[in-house]
Amino acid sequence: MDRIRNFCIIAHIDHGKSTLADRLLQYTGSVSERDFQNQLLDDMDLEREKGITIKSHAVQMVYQQDSKEYILNLIDTPGHVDFSYEVSRSIAACEGALLIVDATQGIQAQTISNLYLALEHDLDIIPVLNKMDMPSAMPEEVKDQIVDLLGCQREDILCVSAKTGEGVDEVMKAIVSRIQPPKGDANAPLQALIFDSVFNSFRGIIAYFRIFNGKIKTNDFVKFVSTGKQYHADEIGVLGLTQNPRPYLEAGDVGYIISGIKNAKEVKVGDTITHVENPCLAPIEGFSEVKPMVFAGIYPVDADDYEELRSSLEKLQLNDASLSFEPESSLALGFGFRCGFLGLLHMEIIQERLDREFDMDVITTVPNVSYHVFTTKKEMLDVHNPSGMPPLNNIDHIEEPYILAQIITKAEFIGSIMTLCLDKRGTLKSQVYLTSDRAELTFDLPLGEIVFDFYDKLKSCSKGYASFDYHLSGYKEAKLAKLDILLNGDSVDALSTLIHNDHAYSFGRRMCEKLKELIPRQQFDIAIQAAIGSKIIARETVKAVRKDVTAKCYGGDITRKRKLLEKQKKGKKRMRQIGNVEVPQSAFLAVLKID
Image 1 (cartoon, helix red, strand yellow):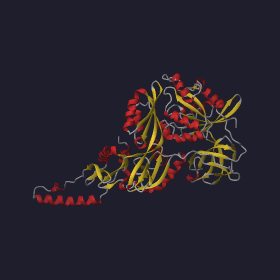
Image 2 (image 1 turned 135 degrees about the horizontal axis):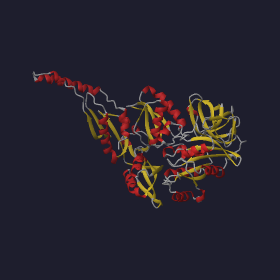
Image 3 (image 1 turned 30 degrees about the horizontal axis):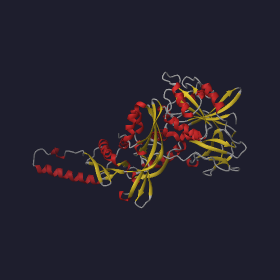
Image 4 (image 1 turned 90 degrees about the vertical axis):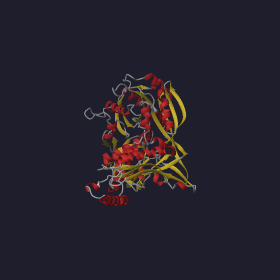
């Protein structure tokens, strides 16, 4: 065990985690020149296209130093705030972490939040200054920031360029010398933590685990503690770039197990694997259950695909434990699922993966957050969906979730960022200057306000320099209204939103204008109205497509024309009573993009 090192790479977005992982794999000879490509561990098309890491990826490398052979288990993690749950799971399976900081950008918000996650688990931190080959690098300034943040010595900071490979040998030596080997007893009962899983259509569910105590052999009879299910370990092995089977694994190892599990619900991330004959006394403390921040309904375009959508979401949940879903129904869209996401990017990625990996066409409703509604009978209801709101006269008050947002930015952008946050009903908690031209602003903000386009606006008003991180701080009372959209007097529940009273009028007005452009014209007038309770606050009308029935009347008496027009009028009236208005898919998507 003293030859094993388990470590992960943590950093802010675009600080060079995946590039450094590529260099480490090349340096240890884990990948041949022929098989090498950039972002080697990012095996999803989506990750390559967007240039971001979405999933954490585990890989084993073998490294020779002083005629000794070391086994290094590396986990490359995402940097975006929406995938922070992936980072926390990776940290739980490691003893050390490489904290990478971009020499051109300095410390940013996610650097700090990922560092705190690592310190909570008592990991050994190795600070690494990346992108030293860039002309705009500021090594001395950024080193000062790292020393202030970590309290380490200046000489402990490694200077590398992941792009050119400079300094990678120093990183390898530091991993072996500064990160502790795993602790554990190979003779104790088996205790292994599941930190990830994937679905394979031929072999069933493959679970990735880290062994803390004991050992496991092929064909052992094992059980998963939280579900109580028992399986034979048909194949176990370690994770190279491909899966490498092994006859046995013991304490400290990271590997995978295939046991022909077909049902996605039987594998839970954070569960403990142990032997059936000689079980461990207590399961490993898993990870905290993830709390979704944003809720949206996902419905199949074709109602017959409901069961297929369920199994697709279950398979996705295996691979992405931060996704949660439960069935719900809507009058406008039929049967579907209410899904919880960690943020808007997470929601976009899930939608894209459903389309690419499972070929599912889905409609997504307006995203919203969960509210605490207190009724006049002193009951508290958790409302994730505007259609679940009790009638107005039964509501005493509503509380909405608030977040503590930390924004790190250059001094010149402080004014525009403050204006943005105050427009979003935020209050400034503190303003700290980290260096002469970098400040950390802490705001108290309603989560509902940042769900839509806050991140994009923050990036544009700071020219891309501001970094943003947040966590839930609690619930506060708010004046909220349920805004309904009515088409010819019928409410479309999928377009309902809960919104602050002050913004309701302008948002309702814009919704009606947008829908007027998108809803196709019918043979009758369509009234589009925005309403709060029974009060209509905005209205637009889609004019009817009118056939000129009097075209054939050339000359003659006016009564002939009147008769035809009266007949048409009756037909339009009947059509309006029985005709229904189809809302196109583009209308649901356009509502998300209303500025």
